[in-house]
Image (tube, rainbow, N blue to C red; front, side):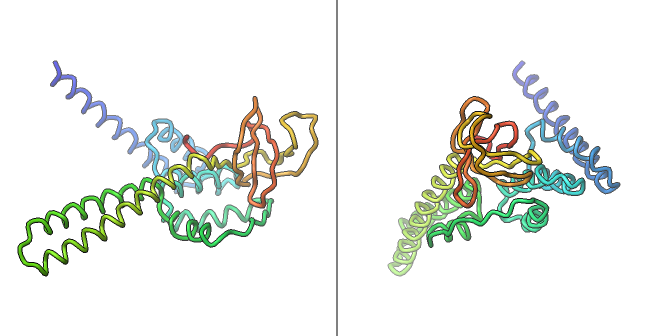
Length: 252
């Protein structure tokens, strides 16, 4: 019975994979034919099966961009970058999409460490840093074994030094992975989907309006009360926004 069950499971997974591939190809063909609404519907069917990828989000972003949907296009480009921060095509298209957004928010000055983190460490996602950890753990272990079994003193010194260096890189990349993961959990980013929305100083409709945001602007979610989210924008301003007018990027 177990063999039959596993065989059926393999067949089911194979059929699902074929269906997803078929949907993705169909969506790509619709996009090429400039049928962007229909293409989005097909891409969404793939997304609904939790078989997401940077390429899927990139194609969704492109489809929404062709329809001049600023919020959704920026949202999906940002989602694509979270899965693959090194994707240059996504970065370039995100620049063009942001030019359609009305809000021009000047970011707060960054410290040297913040600049280093943004310019270098965040080039990889925490999942990609985890792969670096695995690589250095295997490399360090192999070099230590070579050191242990080597008989020539010069080779033992070489293997010992390189294994130590590998373990230093291992622990450094492990720390970066842990830090990037925690940062992703704490920094709940979202994109404004409302064409125009008023941000208030308290989570009530009769509270004072402090500033206005438009579709496509990225915000950081700090807190939630009922159907309100406390947000922070790039220039440090704080306020409360109706939860339905933004969409979270993070999956936590």
